[in-house]
Amino acid sequence: MKTEESARFKELQKQLPKVWQKYQDDPGYEHTSVIVPSMSVNQEELSKVTGAAFYEERLMFALIRLRNPNARLIYLTSQPVHPDVVDYYLQLLDSVSASHARKRLLMISVFDSSAKPLSEKILDRPHLLMRLRKYIGDTGNAYLTCYNSTVLERRLALSLNIPMNGLDPDLLSYGTKSGNRKVFAEAGINFPTGYEDLHSEDEVVNALARLREERPDIKRAVIKLNEGFGGEGNAVFRYPDRALGAEGIRKSLMELSWLSGNETYAHFMQQFDQMGGIVEELIESEETRSPSVQMRILPNGETKLVSSHEQVLGGSTGQAYLGCRFPARDDYRSTLLANAAKVGAVLSKHGIIGRFAIDFLTTRDEQGWHAHAIEINLRMGGTTPPFHALEFLTGGELDVESGHFRAPDGRAKFYAATDNLKSPAYKGLLPEDLFEIIWNHGIGFKHSTGTGVLFYMIGALSQYGKLGMTCIGNSPEQAQQLFDDTVVILDKMTASGGHGKAEPMSDRYLSME
Image (cartoon, rainbow, N blue to C red; front, top):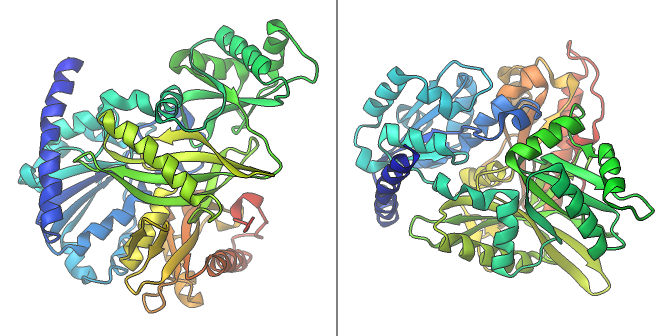
């Protein structure tokens, strides 16, 4: 069954390069784009992320495709997106009227808030699938875009008879933590010392013992589930001061630390037994940074640089993604881009297409900065929405040589962004309330200056007091100032009026260093 499904999908995917080439030849090419922002990852790990259901709204920047007056777009979600949120994005399109774009946009909700991936919910609704096929019409001029690619998205593509702009699920092993290490080795770039393809507590213990033999001065190591998400699924192990054998290390395992406060050792090891994982050194230095590089592999196999970022990480283990700044620092950006190109070449050789990101850890000593590849995310991620926002709002493009983004007038653009801005005081705010604050305080994006703030994940605001935002400036300092000012405004406007007192939360801020 799986072999037949895989073969059918590979045949269907042959349509994708044709659709893509038509668009390259004619930017006004008439086509239909189906957006399914399904978070098809381990649902138990995803449940640890606050407001995860509203992450489906992070791909709303795909509405940029409606700039093409001949493009149609179908966007599916588990729960309805507030009409004002849709209008918020459409009115920011600067090359086509909101009303014209609205006519070519179809928002569809499955009205299902259960803890299942959106793709699975769609597949469970045959009548919806039938209607979708009618809406799509000519399948020869349509394609599917998803947050990530699994067997669920493959089945959805086959059900709709349209190719998917993403990797074949048969290649997902390259995106696991074990697969990442193998790709780094094949690319010939620097990455942490460690061991992959582990599947039991005994193998973890042995790996930790071997790691200490190789690195006698090591203080901490990371144990990662192969399919962890957003830093969840990573456990930090602290070596005792005295040297211990295997049994001593096994006892010390009971003191693992996790991002999630409700994780237990027994549950973590059960997950590890099921999906496997890795053990690797936790590289420590007096000065470290956590940059990333985003890339695409086009349907013709060509690799393309998308962006680079400084990631802001936090949480109890310091490995939870909180936000980012664009671009990565001048000190080592060229090194990151060169390493990313090597990884892209390896992935392309193995037949992977679509978007992916490479996370690095950079450390500095007397000789300068050193880059260590940490992991590959074969999907969209936290740094995808803010860069889409920049493209969406400015119509510019990346200068591959410098790694800077240039607006049509040639001016470089910078931003500070987060999908984790939250406060208990924000709970109860409706989209209408947020938009009033935006307009009354003039913090919205202005095409006249090419600067301002764009919000996303707005649906999570009322229930969870959480949302995302991208603050775009003409300098790093201006972008940071917009970020800081926006937080101050939101806190001030929610300190009264029935929302309680705003309380500072360290993970809401992106400091400059």
